[in-house]
Image 1: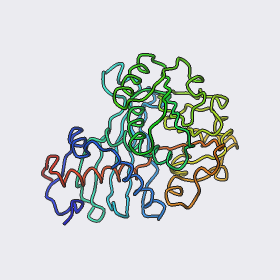
Image 2: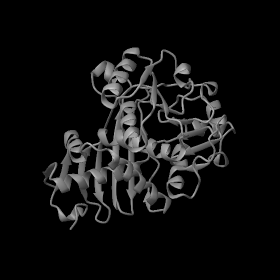
Image 3: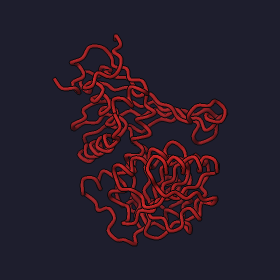
Image 4: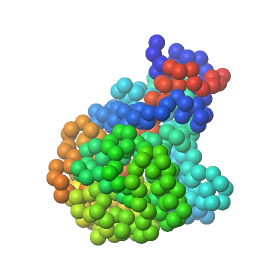
Length: 339
């Protein structure tokens, strides 16, 4: 029986945050491979992914103040079901001294529906998010390797590390954050950890000037990035919630999403534009799964400006968690709990 034969093992495997990191090891390409497997299963129609509900409190109106339930089944080589329960509070770091987001993931045997693993999900969630961007860069990035980063938190670091490992090494990194101290800390880390040339900018427009790939990972509650700041021929990775103004989308030659159904949710940028009559299925060039399988082309011309809008898919989380679970079983990592 192989490591991913869940019923072959008694009890429920618990993986702490430290266990997850230990099971994964130093190489993070595991997450890119897992997300790609999930996307291939999605392209084949071998996934089930309900729309994720958001739990919000009326007295906590910030867009990042919520808990999201993300269930999915992933077939193919994964063949596991599960759910990620991810909470976020915009003031966690400042008020409580803890990271903004936290998560727990439960994996279930796809046939018996028995739970087989429960793990801390914060590490998986961050690296899954970066893996999606790395795959988007493989298919959509221009030849240039000047990377602009808006927002200098955890996701900026996971993205930069995985892009260096799974895509290509940026020739230069430009960074801007509303906190100059945060931006300087990120720059020092990038220089020491990856030996990169990093420039800190005190304005976003200057940060984006002459960039080839734009990575946006902020917690801004309102749109603020103008189309005139975005260089022609660049790839705009819209990883965070509300940063670009609608004209950024309208000025793009191609719009690519990870999942059209999931992206078109009330309150999200593309849904709002659809209500205004400025966006719809005919304006969406492809889903990421179509690029991975070759069903649709990625970048076709150097001068194309491309807007990539991922919403974050549960199928990716479950596939990544399955890969972590397999590594943990193989290496004897984690704690067995009685059912």
